[in-house]
Amino acid sequence: MKYISILIFAMIALVSCQSSNENTAAFNTYGENIIADGAVSLTALNEKLGDMDSVSLTLKGTIEQTCAKKGCWMTVEDENGIATRVTFKDYGFFVPKEGAEGKEVVFAGVAKRKITDVATLRHFAEDAGTSKEEIEAINEPKEEIEFVASGVVIYEKETRQ
Image (cartoon, rainbow, N blue to C red; front, side, top):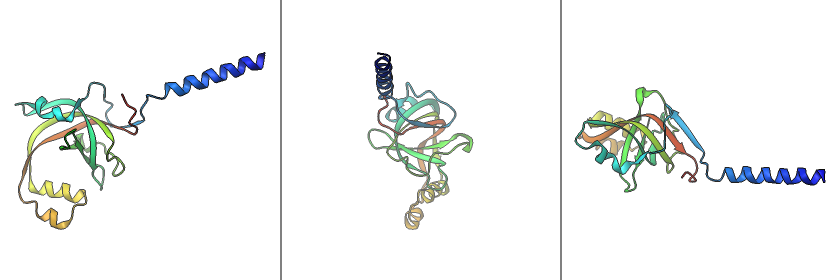
């Protein structure tokens, strides 16, 4: 009887451990700790920025690409496939140089309107491994929204709710 009780207890413990892990997502954090709950879709960025020059917010999207040299920036796509470049506050942290593409990401920081000069655009293209011909074809500044993240959460699994 004693062995049956121990066996039943062990089975219950094993089952409860398995079910508690079903809805958890593995993730890695970079930079400051941020609260991912309540993050809005990257598609809402223009709406949230509105007529302001800058706004602080927490966004979510899918990583399209990261800097292949250092991991010092990433481009994140919204649901419509439109990408936004994200850099990191004070160059204080980096994300993986490879293997993050296609993963869900949540990032918090400041979005602001800016004009990126040709030299910086070429630098980003070089970091991304773009061909020399494509880099040389960049000859005009680009108006865009820059996002400087203070913290990033990259999810390893798609079980996040």
